[in-house]
Image (cartoon, rainbow over all chains, first blue to last red; front, side, top):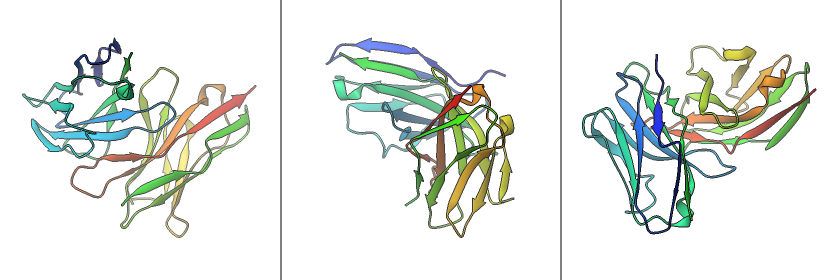
Length: 114
Length: 114
């Protein structure tokens, strides 16, 4: 079956612009996670949804970052007034109700802020 | 708090020789541990998962890992390296809170020489 998909795969934007990154989880997966991966590092947790409820947003670095999952499926991570330090790979993962600790990752969105 | 330490940032082996990628974890309870692999320009793929059922865990592509509580280790091994194994490998522990967020190590880059 289809895995986790993310779009766009690559995004180049100018400093100060807003960007929206999309994640489409595996069909039926109730949990959805966002991570950020800087070059040469492992991914770091940003936020987590169970169905449409945002359960944990402790990893969001500041209030320019927000995420939503209004219908419990597709999620959007929005970064307002982007800064160069926001440049990174943004990864989305999903997991099923029966195996919540096994997360399946999408290909990521490479964000470059000029 | 949970954490993982990957002891080698780079490992180089010859094709056909054994692979050993080292990982130590820190956890206040019996953790869920994972190894993920990231091939260039690809997403993160789950190699194997430990969740206290058996200490020796077999994964995909001939990889396995052994959970050693006394040593707080979860090293990844493979008897014979293949060129296609060249990738970055992440040791991961699952958070013990309600979110199951994943905590990644810094990664080990495996090079396989012909």
